Image (cartoon, rainbow, N blue to C red; front, side, top):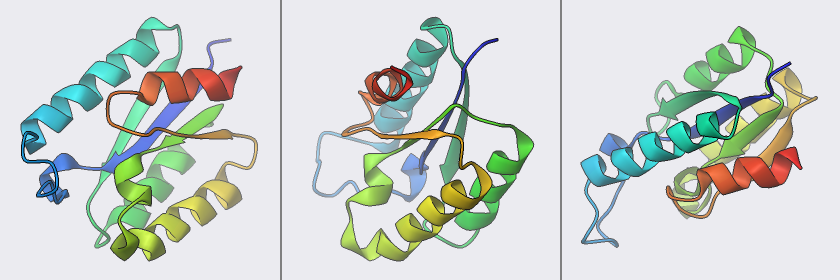
Amino acid sequence: MTKTVLAIGIDPVFSDLSAFPTLTPEIVRAYLDDQIGRIGALGYAVDSCLVDMGATAAEQVEAALRARSYDCIVIGAGLREPPELLLLFETVINLVHSLAPQSRIAFNTTPADTAEAAQRAMG
């Protein structure tokens, strides 16, 4: 049976990229799309769940977690690192914990290493 991965992150259109002047939402989205493709090329079935900064994020994550069982859930750095997103990060972690307790959890460090994070978690 094919192992499954869910990648959860902030949609780049909502990201504050001011600290990274060479990045645009389009460039970040291209990195994310490339990583989703790489995860698939590794032989995993992969879904992406890109959320806003909180208005509907919990509902989107819950819907993704209820739609399918995942072996691994990768949570993006953009969701974890800005202190102002702490409450959203906690909400996502608690949703994963309650709705996907069997899933391994992984964290990427940039939009460009999501495949490596999934691979680490899957062993």
